[in-house]
Amino acid sequence: MKLFYVCFVLASTLGLASLPVHADEDDGYVLTLKNHRFEPATIEIPVNKKVRLVIKNLDASAEEFDSDDLHREKVIPAGREGVVYIGPLDPGTYKFKGEFNAATAVGSVIVK
Amino acid sequence: MRHRDRSLSKNSSATAALLLACALLFMGNAAHAAAHVLSPIVDQGELEIEIKADRTNDANSDLNNAQSSNISIGYGVTDYWATELETQWKKDPKGSRFYDSTSWENRFQLTPQGKYWLDAGLFAEYEHVVQDGDHDSVTLGLLLQKEFGRNVTTFNFLLTRQLGSDAPTGTQVEYRMQTRWRLNPMFEPGLEFYGEPGELGQFNTTEEQRTRMGPVMVGMLPVGGPGKLKYELGYLRGLNSVSEQSTVRLLLEYEMHF
Image (cartoon, rainbow over all chains, first blue to last red; front, side):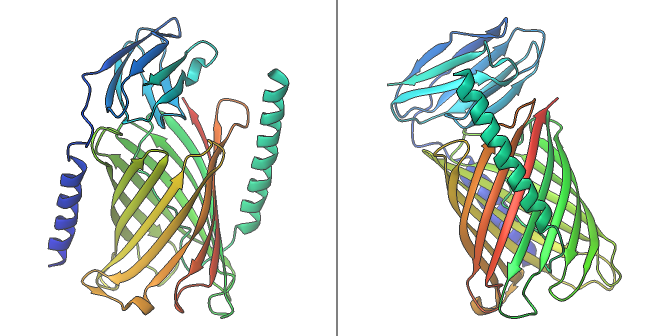
């Protein structure tokens, strides 16, 4: 009976975790890291949409996509790509940066 | 701008030093381990050095001035697995300080952050104790996190079983919850809730469950150099007579990538 409780909780939670989100998910946006700069440095996304950001690191060293505004951190190894999900977001400007090259790797997400 | 940045870093360093001094003052023993709410999110390549401590206050001398302190080092091995080695010291309310145990903790991130309705992870820990009469234990847990705009709510459900032929039977249940508002990276106020209902399938009555609740402040301080200092400062009130009247807890975590 105890094992049943544990399995029930685990299965319920994993099922809940995989529920589709209330807001529609957009196809995705691509950010490229080259010479420690994001291209494009600014992207526009619609309000109340979950968005998939694909970050392609073309540099020879790893970079961390870091944003306090978006509450996201993700290390992208050199020559690889990573995916970050953001939103749904209220209208506004949300800044992000490359933690390892913060002087040049900066950008923002504009939501409107 | 540069002058303002230096001033901010200087203030953050002073705050960090004050918090570290408080943590060191706290370090002692406690009847229970220093607890905090665990996140299901793993940061690959992140090295963490962490100090946790808590101290109880109660009119009952059997519950008053119990202290615990933990020092740990952890690393995000992959984008879904973080591992940590932790040592713990304890002080019972009327006793002296002693080295209690060493633990190996692991967190597994099950879902990409933000992709699904909530974020889920698993926790697995093996604790090796050194005191005669105590027993090694295994803890498994479910870690959940949900964002509501600037609010982040995290929930842990933990099951612990002691090992050994003479160990107490039964699986102990514990739950923890933290809800905080990301107002500013350095200051995120919130609330916490900790409960120990008892043995799985044989919960104690509400009045017999150790239950605590209270405010918490969480933040990240830029202290200069390659890393950041995360802190959590919480004050928990016991919600019944079997719980300590109050507990102050402090967590300091230095994080850096390599």
